[in-house]
Image 1 (tube, helix red, strand yellow):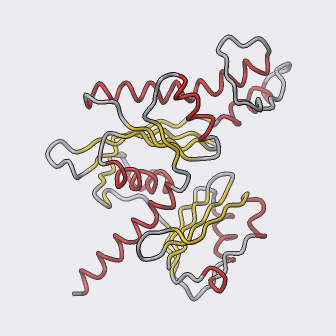
Image 2 (cartoon, one colour):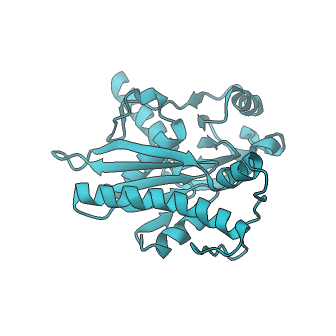
Length: 263
């Protein structure tokens, strides 16, 4: 059994995968409440651990202190190529480990032009295309990073004298012709995100001669998806475990490669 951990800027998610790639247990907590999470091997029954951490060294130390020391831990770094996906970042290892794992999982699921969105504290919007000569090979051709929905709204409140702190509408309604300052801030922030997704979708469609699928994960995935559908981006799905699935696939590829080398 494999324990996968996706440590983001705000939340830490985890899942246990069996050998078939099925999730048998999963959980999530705020990074600030990690000390209350039970990640012990005696409870979860894992033998190995693979981790994507973008929350910094202090959080990595906190995670490691909760794990049984006798089990091997793999801290993921992005590579030039893995799982039939090529990473075209100028410095491949500088790509966020969560983005890399999500891209690997998305390519495994789609094998088609795809936009991968993580709508969290920051929003990442990344593009994958099939390789021209070998369609089973995917290429991550690049992406964008913008502030997340909450971060945009907080920055306006903190950096201006008169703009209020916004509480989200209960119905997630968005009107581009907002009639209050709170609604205008919320609508502007959400439409900045979905506008960037829309721009990439149409640019990628022109390049690939087909509209890409869009996969969204992260804490603001539902609001982002709803607004994408509203602007007629209809090939949109939410897969909240995308990074965790990618971690499983990357671990499986590493183990298979090791077995091949020892034969």
